[in-house]
Length: 623
Image (tube, rainbow, N blue to C red; front, side, top):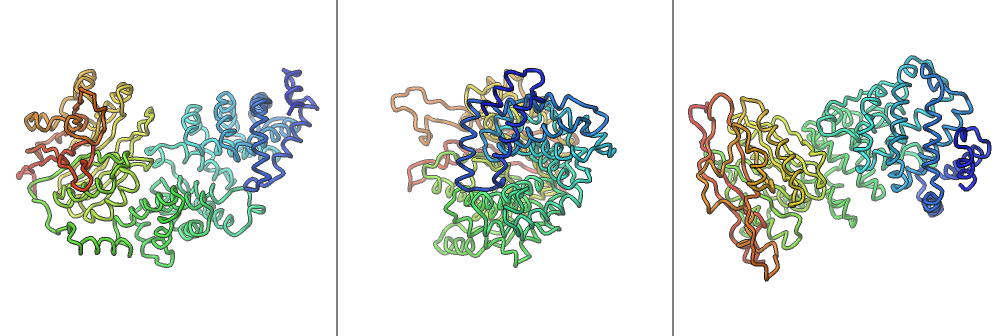
């Protein structure tokens, strides 16, 4: 490293042909590649730690990226790679070092992600090479360069904090054409990168062909059958992660199941290391989002999906335990409960707990509940969630918007609210859920719209459905919290209201949630758009139902005892937009719920009151 740094500093213009620089670079790369990529031995770990320490002093990653930028500028752009043999060899050396160091160390990977000029040069060169590459005007010696560049981009995009950087250098447009490459490896790398950086709307437009899905499944099977020393191109963790990302696309889910990925994922989940288990269960969870695939996975008993997930739900590793519980929730949603769930439900019912009646709500009304259930507080969370469940099973709303849901509370809800379909936003530490009653609501489409500028992972959840034969759009969100994020919150509200206003004109739109917003901020936005109604106002502005977050009454949030000011704010709201034709439903009552303390723990179900709205259905619009 000293020799590389010295030669680099002394040869500012032509360092890439300096023999001392090149020989030292080759030796350093040989050291890094002397152990298999996915070797988890102590020797490999110590080597990576040494490189990480030396990088801080000698900055070899920055030097090699600078040299690579210069080399990528050389040569004839009408050929691929269009550069002299010695430059091809040098570029291979530098890129191989960047790949080997970054795939084993997140810190070094993120260091590469910050080198935007290098990433821009890579993207530009991939674009210039596209035509000669597909026209076969290529040199055999350069094929490794293309794979190394794609692999480097893939490694960088494995970490969420780098996604925006890669999106900013316009990587999507450049890489999409390579999905049709004759090289399966290039196809798979392209698909992996594009799947990593695509948002929820882009992922549906990202089509992959039958051949590349078949190759991905084959790669998983090969990695399972062979030792890492033989099959070190992809690790099991990496392949399972690619399956997880690719399975975000509706079409791909069916292809993956068709080509046999499920039993392979189950085997990884059963026998793999912790990281492998986690990614395998994440992949299974995504596959379960497709109704047909879900039915096949449930009906194919020898796959033992429920058995494996129930076992992993008791894993000592918290991440594996939580994702397995989430997958079980998705399964239980549409399917007879597993033995454990049935035993729990039967036991609770026999102890006199709330049983669920088959009696449906009136055909002439719709009930909507919106509630932030305070999942971010672990204090008395089981008792509080049980109180929420009791209210749901007693009042039986047709539609429910929940905010601040976590995996554990989702599991409790899905086990005990058996008449509901659960639609979750992207599950992070906490998330939103839309619950709709099976026999009343038919869901036709569901989307998650990310707020990309959010620092708190906030999204807009949107569901198209019919409620008692009436076409509707349901939307919920938990907008950016805290006073300091007012501008971001208003930006998110404007985006959400844009979706409300521009929803199909033949549908009623209901948008509710914890908006964290104040009346002053609504005024700063110049009020609500024309046609968007605030249901608290529409039902009479009752002062008793105005404030949904009221610290003068709700003691869940412990304020300083000597604090005189007890804030109360209308954070939670429900908005409505009628269809263009005529009024289909009318709000007739607006109630706050959850205002009674739970006797066993002397606290409220949440630090927010829930909102329960009753709508009358206009009889002239029902068939």
